[in-house]
Image 1 (cartoon, rainbow, N blue to C red):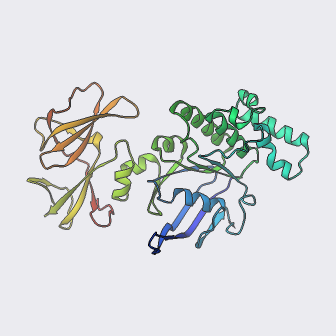
Image 2 (image 1 turned 135 degrees about the vertical axis):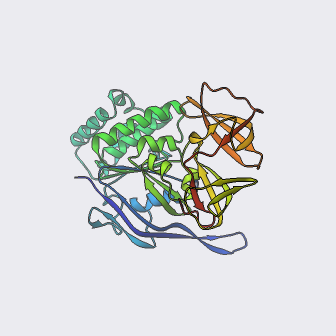
Image 3 (image 1 turned 90 degrees about the vertical axis):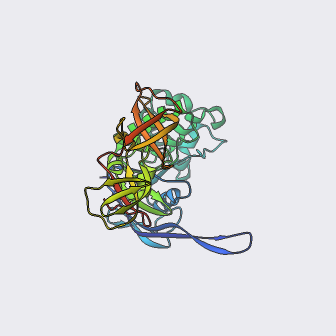
Length: 362
């Protein structure tokens, strides 16, 4: 049976002292409420310093929250050590024992427990079979003889040989080149699918998050802003940060006034389909929804053309007459060039966010 992880009102504050001896408190985690279904993988994304790794360490038991509770199924685990929680961890820095061969790195926790060598050999054999037929060729090599990808495979092996109830990954692929990242990502995903172990996967790479996560959590400033599938985060963002952060490219957001249900952008006046209180807002729309047309409401000049991860489309970066920067997604076979002037209209689907709170209004 898998483990359901529940975090209930988790808070963690760090005290920071400046060079002038001024003390300030940083909310690393603020009122975190989260449920990870058993057997599922939650990918966690967010900017540097948003609290992703702190969240992982709290789940692992490496640090204690100031308040709140952590449950594995119905069991409160706040006072349990990582070993007692049966946590398996894989970090960005592989932290292998340099004086042991790969086999010794896998066997070490069992040596501590004085497990019989025959049983250790059997566990290593099973782990090698799981990680692929070529893994056994790594067992007699020390870390300095292994490539980055091979070291990470040994670190993963050291994690799964313990048969963990929960697996935690902290940027496990960030030290690998693009080719090895792809290969290792596939291997990890196969393991997660095979064992159905509840997992948390912290990454800065959204492509990685999509590949690894059944669900994705978006964090900023110690808060979890939204949890959902990638499509849900794209199509139904709950606030302007999620809209501006998720996606390649993320949603266009521009400041505008709304007066009598009309969007006012510079000299442009666009009727909304909804009644909204007059005020200043952020207007959002997806790059893929914008249509370039000679009859467009907005005019602008292309100042940069970028690729996309799939390379089947291009992103036009356009500066409008109102000095707004807009990204427009086009198909690869559409021909445009830097310096070209184009016109376009806002798409039918428009998102409206409160300018101050960031909360979605429409």
